[in-house]
Image 1 (tube, rainbow, N blue to C red):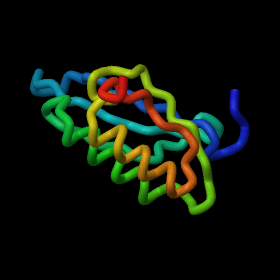
Image 2: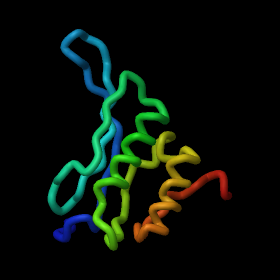
Image 3: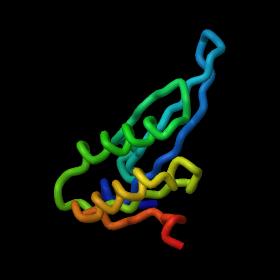
Image 4: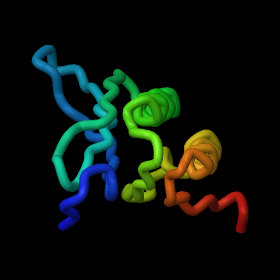
Length: 105
């Protein structure tokens, strides 16, 4: 388990049932060390906008000079070109990890 904040992050999308029996989808990015939620978005659909908005929020909440590794389950939404392209951009902003991009193989 990581003890240094902003070093290892985790992301996932979770389906939750609302009180009115409808479904919502929660996309979150958490810090392994602090357990803090660094980015959090909710949508009525598990679409690409949900993932893009979560990643955009993360870029606003990471301190400069920090190089986190982002772990995901590699679901379809983490293989979107926007997601992998954004991680390339983040890598240039000092974030170390780049998710595997199947379009490059």
